[in-house]
Image 1 (cartoon, rainbow, N blue to C red):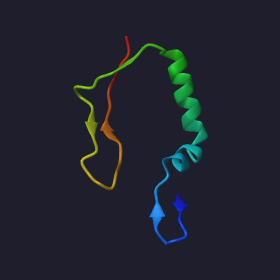
Image 2: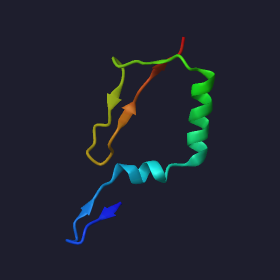
Image 3: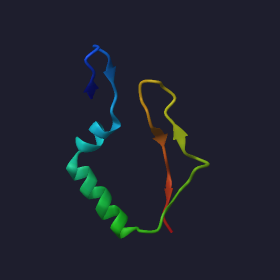
Image 4: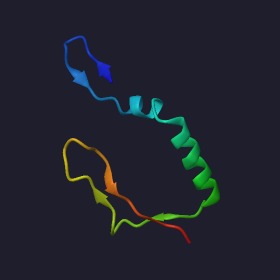
Amino acid sequence: MTISTSKDVYYDPYDDVLNADPEGRIALEQLLKRFPEWEVDLTNARLSPTSTVRGWESMPALVP
């Protein structure tokens, strides 16, 4: 999280990337090596309905 001198707090998405779980990153890398061809099923993908959670609630992937 980045904090300014005017006591306002700003969200920096790069902080999340830098602090991401390395085991999760390794698992995702291995999964993508195993299944290099895939598609996101956008018709069934859903954004989170709350304002407190940013991102996808569901994002199904199709693996041929």
